[in-house]
Length: 162
Image (cartoon, rainbow, N blue to C red; front, side, top):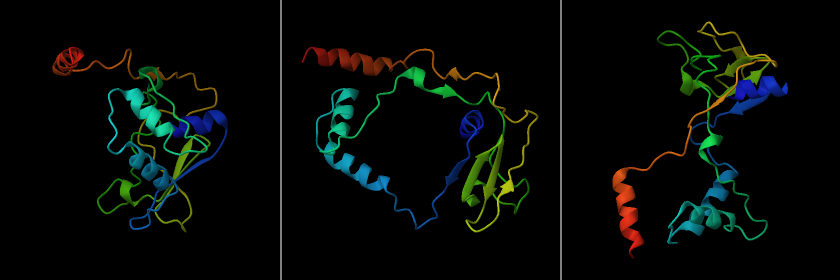
Protein backbone atom coordinates (compact mmCIF):
# COMPACT_ATOMS: atom_id res chain seq x y z
CA UNK A 1 0.00 0.00 0.00
CA UNK A 2 2.77 2.45 0.94
CA UNK A 3 4.71 1.63 -2.23
CA UNK A 4 1.65 2.24 -4.39
CA UNK A 5 0.95 5.55 -2.61
CA UNK A 6 4.57 6.73 -2.92
CA UNK A 7 4.62 5.89 -6.62
CA UNK A 8 1.28 7.48 -7.47
CA UNK A 9 2.04 10.68 -5.50
CA UNK A 10 5.68 10.75 -6.64
CA UNK A 11 6.93 11.05 -3.06
CA UNK A 12 9.31 9.17 -0.77
CA UNK A 13 7.84 7.51 2.31
CA UNK A 14 10.20 6.55 5.13
CA UNK A 15 8.88 4.12 7.73
CA UNK A 16 10.95 3.78 10.92
CA UNK A 17 10.56 1.00 13.48
CA UNK A 18 11.26 1.59 17.14
CA UNK A 19 13.94 -0.42 18.87
CA UNK A 20 13.03 -2.50 21.88
CA UNK A 21 13.29 -0.42 25.05
CA UNK A 22 13.01 2.86 23.11
CA UNK A 23 9.29 2.93 22.46
CA UNK A 24 8.10 6.24 23.94
CA UNK A 25 6.01 7.86 21.24
CA UNK A 26 3.97 11.06 21.03
CA UNK A 27 0.81 9.05 20.33
CA UNK A 28 1.19 7.20 23.67
CA UNK A 29 -0.28 10.19 25.49
CA UNK A 30 -3.21 10.25 23.06
CA UNK A 31 -3.94 6.58 23.69
CA UNK A 32 -3.64 7.10 27.44
CA UNK A 33 -6.07 10.03 27.35
CA UNK A 34 -8.59 7.97 25.37
CA UNK A 35 -8.24 4.97 27.70
CA UNK A 36 -8.89 7.16 30.76
CA UNK A 37 -11.97 8.66 29.09
CA UNK A 38 -13.45 5.28 28.12
CA UNK A 39 -12.64 3.46 31.39
CA UNK A 40 -15.80 2.60 33.31
CA UNK A 41 -18.16 4.25 30.82
CA UNK A 42 -21.09 2.24 29.45
CA UNK A 43 -20.66 1.35 25.78
CA UNK A 44 -23.86 0.22 24.05
CA UNK A 45 -23.10 0.89 20.39
CA UNK A 46 -19.96 1.69 18.36
CA UNK A 47 -21.03 5.33 18.15
CA UNK A 48 -20.46 5.56 21.93
CA UNK A 49 -16.74 4.93 21.30
CA UNK A 50 -16.67 7.70 18.70
CA UNK A 51 -18.29 10.19 21.08
CA UNK A 52 -16.01 9.30 24.00
CA UNK A 53 -12.84 9.42 21.87
CA UNK A 54 -13.81 12.77 20.32
CA UNK A 55 -14.34 14.34 23.75
CA UNK A 56 -11.36 12.70 25.47
CA UNK A 57 -9.50 15.98 25.11
CA UNK A 58 -11.29 19.24 25.83
CA UNK A 59 -9.60 21.54 23.38
CA UNK A 60 -9.12 20.92 20.56
CA UNK A 61 -11.35 17.87 20.30
CA UNK A 62 -9.89 14.76 18.70
CA UNK A 63 -11.00 14.18 15.12
CA UNK A 64 -12.59 10.76 14.75
CA UNK A 65 -13.50 9.12 11.47
CA UNK A 66 -16.07 6.33 11.63
CA UNK A 67 -14.99 3.72 9.06
CA UNK A 68 -17.42 1.60 7.09
CA UNK A 69 -16.78 -1.66 5.25
CA UNK A 70 -16.00 0.05 1.92
CA UNK A 71 -13.00 1.90 3.41
CA UNK A 72 -10.93 -1.31 3.55
CA UNK A 73 -9.18 -2.34 0.33
CA UNK A 74 -7.50 -5.56 -0.75
CA UNK A 75 -3.82 -4.94 -1.36
CA UNK A 76 -2.87 -8.59 -1.84
CA UNK A 77 -3.58 -8.34 -5.58
CA UNK A 78 -0.83 -5.74 -6.06
CA UNK A 79 1.91 -8.31 -5.49
CA UNK A 80 4.85 -5.95 -6.04
CA UNK A 81 6.72 -7.75 -3.27
CA UNK A 82 5.79 -11.13 -1.85
CA UNK A 83 7.58 -10.40 1.45
CA UNK A 84 9.59 -7.69 3.17
CA UNK A 85 12.11 -10.23 4.47
CA UNK A 86 15.50 -8.91 3.35
CA UNK A 87 17.32 -12.25 3.47
CA UNK A 88 16.59 -15.64 1.92
CA UNK A 89 18.83 -18.05 3.84
CA UNK A 90 19.34 -19.01 7.44
CA UNK A 91 21.42 -16.35 9.17
CA UNK A 92 20.34 -13.60 6.76
CA UNK A 93 18.41 -10.60 8.12
CA UNK A 94 14.72 -11.22 8.88
CA UNK A 95 11.75 -8.87 9.11
CA UNK A 96 12.31 -8.15 12.82
CA UNK A 97 15.84 -6.93 12.02
CA UNK A 98 14.49 -4.09 9.83
CA UNK A 99 14.80 -0.61 11.37
CA UNK A 100 13.85 1.56 8.36
CA UNK A 101 11.89 0.98 5.14
CA UNK A 102 11.93 3.52 2.32
CA UNK A 103 9.33 3.47 -0.47
CA UNK A 104 10.59 5.36 -3.50
CA UNK A 105 10.47 5.16 -7.29
CA UNK A 106 8.59 1.85 -7.32
CA UNK A 107 11.10 0.12 -5.05
CA UNK A 108 11.49 -0.64 -1.37
CA UNK A 109 14.82 -0.16 0.38
CA UNK A 110 15.68 -1.18 3.92
CA UNK A 111 18.16 -0.63 6.75
CA UNK A 112 18.89 -3.03 9.59
CA UNK A 113 20.68 -0.24 11.52
CA UNK A 114 19.72 3.43 11.48
CA UNK A 115 23.30 4.42 10.60
CA UNK A 116 23.60 2.02 7.62
CA UNK A 117 23.06 2.91 3.99
CA UNK A 118 19.83 1.79 2.31
CA UNK A 119 19.85 -1.61 0.56
CA UNK A 120 17.38 -2.73 -2.10
CA UNK A 121 14.80 -5.17 -0.80
CA UNK A 122 14.90 -8.33 -2.94
CA UNK A 123 11.94 -8.70 -5.30
CA UNK A 124 11.06 -12.39 -5.27
CA UNK A 125 8.14 -12.38 -7.67
CA UNK A 126 7.50 -11.77 -11.32
CA UNK A 127 5.24 -8.72 -10.98
CA UNK A 128 6.91 -5.54 -12.16
CA UNK A 129 7.24 -2.54 -9.87
CA UNK A 130 4.38 -0.03 -9.77
CA UNK A 131 4.33 2.95 -12.07
CA UNK A 132 2.49 6.23 -11.77
CA UNK A 133 0.09 5.10 -14.48
CA UNK A 134 -0.45 1.62 -13.00
CA UNK A 135 -3.93 0.56 -14.16
CA UNK A 136 -4.39 -1.89 -11.29
CA UNK A 137 -7.39 -0.77 -9.25
CA UNK A 138 -7.85 -1.59 -5.61
CA UNK A 139 -11.05 -3.48 -4.83
CA UNK A 140 -13.00 -3.30 -1.61
CA UNK A 141 -12.03 -6.00 0.85
CA UNK A 142 -15.69 -6.48 1.81
CA UNK A 143 -18.77 -6.21 -0.42
CA UNK A 144 -21.06 -5.50 2.54
CA UNK A 145 -20.79 -4.92 6.28
CA UNK A 146 -19.61 -8.01 8.12
CA UNK A 147 -22.45 -10.04 9.53
CA UNK A 148 -22.62 -10.77 13.23
CA UNK A 149 -22.91 -14.32 14.52
CA UNK A 150 -26.40 -15.74 15.00
CA UNK A 151 -25.84 -16.17 18.74
CA UNK A 152 -24.96 -12.48 19.12
CA UNK A 153 -27.94 -11.44 17.00
CA UNK A 154 -30.24 -13.54 19.19
CA UNK A 155 -28.84 -11.95 22.36
CA UNK A 156 -29.32 -8.47 20.91
CA UNK A 157 -32.94 -9.29 20.08
CA UNK A 158 -33.46 -10.46 23.66
CA UNK A 159 -32.03 -7.17 24.95
CA UNK A 160 -34.64 -5.21 23.00
CA UNK A 161 -37.26 -6.45 25.48
CA UNK A 162 -35.35 -4.80 28.33
